[in-house]
Length: 344
Image (tube, rainbow, N blue to C red; front, side):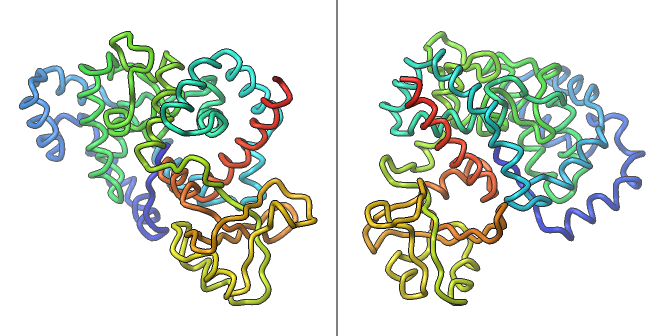
């Protein structure tokens, strides 16, 4: 979850410098950048020798550096990206997971106001409901990126420190736990600082476990969305019509809502109406004109697609900053909702 990338130039610089850095990675505990991490952890009461042993055990992984240089969100368009996540098998797995955890999903929906299909879609996109949680050792991933990936080194060193802290607070073995190439863990792929900030012990067993406990994972995903101000009942997105080239000024503003639907209308952009539109579409809304929105243009399987998206779409992008990711979550959630309705 929550993948962070800079621009193409920074990424290119990181890749170009890989050979030069190779000789300076035999022991991360001896790197100058490790000293603040060690000192901070010792102040928290964590044994210095244990921290040094973990850092010395971390191994640089060039595959991780290669992976972060070419994320799918940056290399694919919507037509290709959706094929990764919108398969019937993923929907079927989501229905089975929902049946198994019906009571937990009921409670999370009521307590946090986040629809079960959104919770399910996040876990489905991230790990296929726990089937694929990542094969990289998180220690290696965070050390490699924290010490040998200059564009985001400070961020990933912060994650590395948080991983060591989680050993004491979440019963995680930092030397063995595996996850994504960016150091995300568990059913919902939380990076360590998100684990610290948003994970909840949803079954009240005294351990907040997002790796082995789907109940904690469901509650934690719901809490993440709640803490990022998910608005219950607010539609996420609607397909839009455009009348002329004025729409381009709106797409340039990005996916964070920054204009009203009334303003969009004055630029020739209107959402499909659920009440009056004769076109078949499950992606529609009839919202007040003062509702804040953003406009996306995506290259879909049948060409350009235009979408008016609400604040709740932006909330999904707080989990992963890519609008392609958020659209995949949205459309998987719709398929899940339809399948769950048929199942009842």
